[in-house]
Image (cartoon, rainbow, N blue to C red; front, side):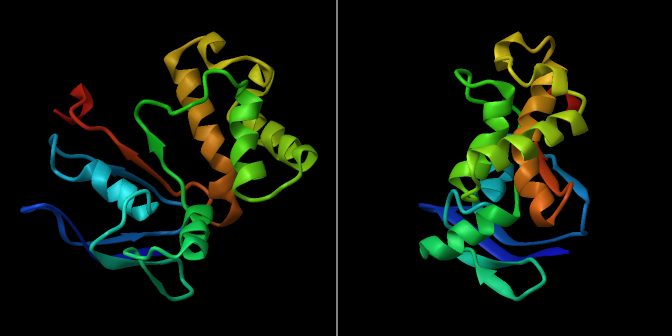
Length: 177
């Protein structure tokens, strides 16, 4: 279980997050839906410490961690335990599907290139994209497959400890109407 408690984030005079509590069961998929400007993306950025919360904690089951932290080791630990997929995919267009999967393993987790490629190929196979390992995102034949490729690029982080715990932000897409 991932437990998020009392998260606050303010921009000038505007409270974007005001005491957010969230429990995410192991291996759950959570969708964050709401109108534009309601704090969905801010919540996701704060959870992965891409932005610092003004207040709040996240707990992966071994004790709460301050989301307002500036400690690089703590931030690295949080980021190694959680992942999410943004609506716009966030793939490196100049890298193959396999390279998009292996980059976080090499640079965030310190795995060797050989080990990262083995894991990457397993993850691509897991989502039915093994045949696209050496192709670039723009050549993978449909938005659905590019989306799967993006999800796969986050799977090595997710499967490390919280397999399948994804957060996806939809913004004002027609799916939220």
